[in-house]
Length: 64
Image (cartoon, rainbow, N blue to C red):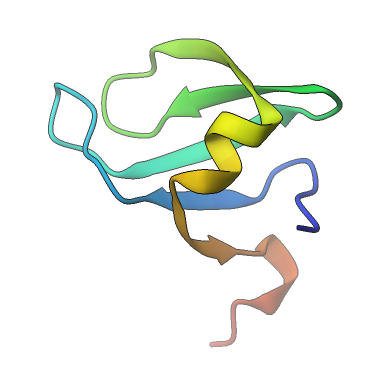
């Protein structure tokens, strides 16, 4: 799966704050993700995060 910096990931399960969208801050074997609801940052193994991704929103795919 092609995940890049600053992508927004919509996950299957919500964070305890209720938000499902996470911003990618770091990629590699692990992802560093920031919750767009409360700002909490977590490190998640790539394979574990990829299983829970529902949608990837790219910054340059947004049209006005």
